[in-house]
Every structure is written in C-alpha cells, then in structure tokens.
Image 1: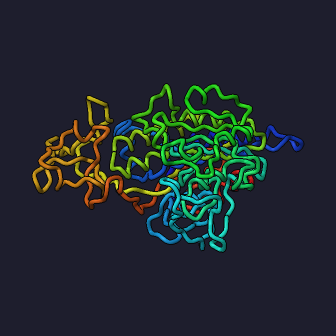
Image 2: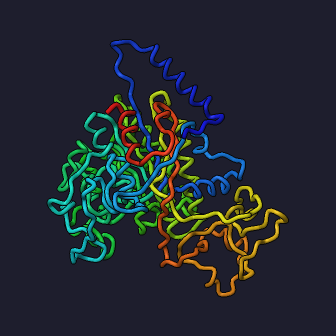
Image 3: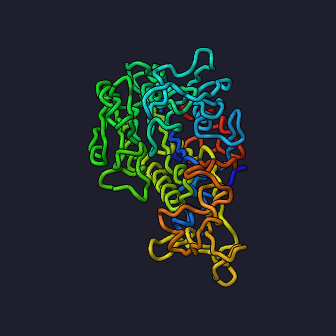
Length: 479
C-alpha cells in the first residue's frame, strides 16, 4: 500500500526536476551522479515513532519522517528467528540476503557461534579469522558494490562504528561480537582488511571504542595484537577527527575517519539528552559533513546513516532518551533533504526492528513535552474524560508509556507514587510487564515503517521484506 497525502505535490516537484534535468542533457554529457542515502533508526518501531512525534511536536504535529511522500511497511524476521537482532536485519538491507541472528553480511547457511578464546577481559575475538572454514560465505554489501563501481561511500552512526548495524555495511563475520575483527576489516592495507572495499570507505563517523587501540590503552581492554588502527587509518590517507571542532574544520578533499565520545568510556556516542554540543557533533552535523564530502564524487555515492542509540535507550526502558534520540535522527533526515538535489538522490528511511514499547490508553491529549512545564507523553496517564489521574488495579498511577518486558515492575515500586515529575525524568525507566535484567528489554517482532523521497522513491510501497529494499537501493545507484 502506498499512502498519499499533501506530500504528493512534493513528489511531483521531484519528478518535474528529473524531467528538466533529462531535457537539458545531451548524448555526450556525462551521466548524472546517482546518490542514495539510507537512514536506519535502530529499534525505531511504529510506537516509538508515534511517541516521538507527540514528544516533539504534539499530536497534530509532523516530524520530517511524516512528510516522506512514499511509505510502506517492512517485515523484519531473520532467517532463523521470528524476532531479529540488528545484525541480520541490516545485512538484509545491505546484501539482499537474510542471515541468521548475530550473523553479519554472510550467506543464510552461516551458523552463529559464541566467541570464547581465553584472552584478556573484554577481548571477544581471537584475531583475524572472521568465520571457521566452511561455515557459510561472504555476500557483497552495497558499500562494496558502490566502491567497485567508483562511487563514494560513507557510514555514519551514533553507535560505535564496529556495532552490528554499521558493521553490516563494510564487514563480514559469523558473530556480531567479533568487533576487533570488524574494525580490522575497515583498515586499507592492514591485516584482515576487507579488500572488497578498494581503498576503504570514504567517510566513517561514529563512537570511539577500544577495538581500535592497543591492549591496555583502556584498562584491561584493547587489541592483543597491539595494533593502533587509528594510526593505521591515518597512514592510509584518512583525516582523523575526534570532536565537533575537528569535524567542522576537516577538509572536503579527504577521506574522513571520526571517532567521538565525550565520556571516552562507553564506546558509543552520548545520548542526545547528554551530548555536550561543544564536544560531540550531532547526528545531523555528521550527516551534513558526510554529504559535503561525498557530493564531489562524480559518479555518485552511497551513504548510510544510523540513529544507533534509539535502540540502546529502549533496551534500558528509558523513554526520555529514546524520544530525544529519535528526534535527533529525524533532524538528520531534514538536514539531508535540505542539502541534496532530489532529482539525483534517493533518500530511504526505515528501521531494523521493533521494540516492546507500548502506549497505554485512554490518555487525554498531552501536547508536546516541555521540560519543567509539560511532561507530555512521558507523564502519568490522565483520563480523557475528566483529566483525572488514571489508576491501576492496585489504585496506583501509571505512565502513558510502558514496555512488554524490562527491568521495572509495578509490583516493586516500594510504595512510590508516580507523578509526571518522576516519569518524565531523563533517568526514569518505564514500567514493564515481564521482568528482565537491567537493560534486558528485548526487540519486538512488529513490522517497521519505511519511507522515501527523491529519485526512484516510488519503488518504496506496500508491505515489503527487508531483503527487497536491497534491490531498490542497488537499482537507484545504477549498479
């Protein structure tokens, strides 16, 4: 099904621009560049999108993602699981092959396995062998195909660059936890380099981690081969940046490698609610910089942008941070749309999987969340009939947002009476039905949203398997 709205006029404008470009060309003119920007909100299910809209602009408002003229739904199951993890879902988008859970950019017969090597604490993988011999085979990613065709390539994420979603663009491995091996696959000319990347991915921006540095640089963690992959990337011709100022000032005629984290501890970039804008760039700023570099590629480019920390906040049942990171992701989409020529560029926005986030009914309309003034959707549920605080079977207030599973249960409140001030705090963890360990909320199996704008966007429509998106992106790049 394709949903049409006022955005049809925007789609018509795109088609018109394409026709003008075609009429103005000649047989001897060089082919126009074909660009694809693929946005992936990690864990950004339909409920998360709805809640983020209300959080940011209220029930009647619109996020940028709401204005995309072509829309549909994506089925996300993996080859062996009803509920996928990020590794096979992103691999399906990037390769057209649906692997087993935990497997990155490998054939469907590849078995996942637990990496246990008796090496120092924090070191998961033993070296440079990505899979036991005979266990499946590599399948090419869109980034690899783009490099082979001479197109520019970029990977941008708020998670660490070796995390499952970005890793599925440039590496191949039987288990997503082999992040030392994943990092090595990105370094041109180094041991374990993925040679299908040619001279390397042109732009790589994300969170710093000890997977890139020698053992002991981070206490009891780091590479036991003592390689400093940051220095190796510099030697391979990359400009290295580690803060917002460095990103802003980086030249445009360079390959760019950026690792950011103001805390220098967690491996991921900060949540949007915690980000120091003087130190860490926003996802929108990283996206804009990547586009600025890649737009000089005469044949076009393939750019992947992940809002990685949406997923992490949801695993923690921490709605405030999940909402803020979803809005930051939406701002990156807006930045891209404003920066590109849509007659030459296809922008696709989707998610890799759902979460168990739910909106409890029947709440009165809340309007957008305003810190210190209006808790909005982060508050306790108030009846639409009279605005009174709704009560559960134990005569206690409860939040509008909750989870199917997670670390907090109503039965363990220890007499705490919930209020808007409590439930809207950025450190509050929403209530859940089924108890899990801290941070153990699971993914959900619901279909996720997909939307598109620009050149070839009409191919996005109806209910699609995630593997089908690969062919659409590949065709849009002319590969």
